[in-house]
Length: 161
Length: 243
Image 1 (cartoon, chains in turn red, blue):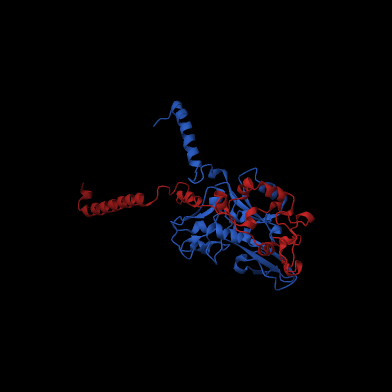
Image 2 (image 1 turned 45 degrees about the vertical axis):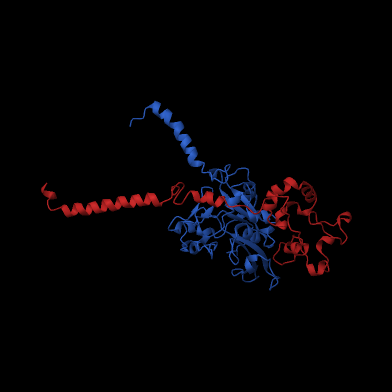
């Protein structure tokens, strides 16, 4: 026991370290969220929180469930692969409650040129027009119906809106 | 403890059930979603991109991205005939309102949509000092807003410039690959709004995903492959001048 004579201060120091270590472990278990480390060095629950965000775009499946007639019309035209919300905008609220929330009326003068205004960087095969020259100010849907844009005699509204 | 054959036979099914629970890390909001069954990426089919900016606007509304900040944006490249090393790139307001007519004629001109590359070995997650950003088991690089200190290490680390600090929350923000949508079986907002199919969500773990056929038959590249980030945003027909 001679070796431990006069070693009291070392024991006291060791005790401080042990107490400190235990306090650290205790506080750590209290502060670190339960799901931290579940999948890696991050909070596992974070993913569920991010996934819980509500959606704004309902997705074309939701549109097609009700608007089968439009889907049929689109199938005959070039816009068959253009999703509904690409033009109509985010409408998840309308899909949830079709009765009370109605989508806004669209303005073809704004919408069509977004894609079809000529630009040198657009793919050469993509149909482009210089809108100022193309229609001399007439709205696009005078001649083209957006759901099936090719010009056929019976589908044009002849300037009616 | 001695494990006899009898004990082992009892333990194995228990271990199997336990392992199933480990694998099935199902977020509460989407009970039919199993993370281990997916490995998300995106295909950018450049010859189809018309620079309409629909993706930028869709992302902004879907994710409440503040004005002047972008989780995705579209760049217009102008590669002159004799200086292909130095392409002129413009992206007015991220391409949100489309692109004005080009200033210079001639050369090679094309659009390149950009977004988080959801790298499998992402530099941004490696530098986070607190574990606030991470790659989820289904391959999406996410930010835990409640953990983020806003130290900006990740913003500097991203070789693609895809992160920013949100001006209100002062935490790191980035593309989540619409995690709240893909876990519900929907595609991302940008893919939903893309009129030409230039953006397509790709599940690289799903053998039935059309991406595999596409990869077999097209020349697909990633951005900055020399950074060895193993990016999962795949660009079809990418021009060599794109940075």
